[in-house]
Image 1 (spheres, one colour):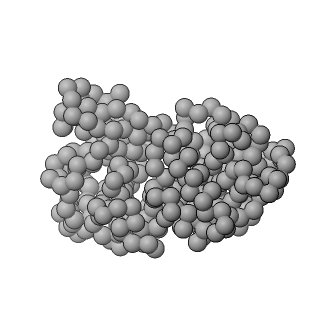
Image 2: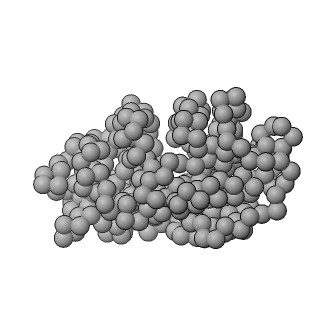
Length: 301
């Protein structure tokens, strides 16, 4: 996939333009992304991290960016940071199908899947299957929540505190434990993930009896929104209220700073969905991810 042309350059199918330039992407699509910061939380935080820490943040393969404009207004965005699958942000089914055709005919890096809001992800996967003959398989369903009124739970023994350098070994183990639980990487290797979290002061721990027993992590605020992520309790300590306590503490800190708090859950996990609803998080949207593989079945499912 090449640079594709900027806002005044060649236009792809369905009005899509592709670029390898983060600066161009944000200049053209930044206002659109910031117009709905909760829905666009991942694209905002990832592009912010790329700008602060470099385009090689997630790997050696450079990121790809794209946008679709209708009557001069951006209404859909592509953010692709290999080795992760492309993300379709906004738009509709027609926009997603057009993007699938553009990437299928781009002659460059081939995506191994796609992620996005349910309608767009399904449309992209279906068009990819039709165009390429590859089989597609849904691998993940998640729900985005936004905090309404925080309902503090009954607190277990212990207290909340910020993580420090002395917690590094624990945090690295918990990073890997969380990744194993959700069946995916957190985005960075354990050491780099801890470095970034400690540097921004974004890792909050619940401590009981002088030892950490649970964690929750906050992204840096972008466009007035903060994503709570990587909520984790080691298996032997679950069911004691630690995750709810540390998430409530972190959520209160986020909103006290004037930002909104959002988070994702795995729809296959009723425990976490019930926990966050109990804290006052309200469903906002649902997302899916698909993996692509060569095979005779060309239908999305």
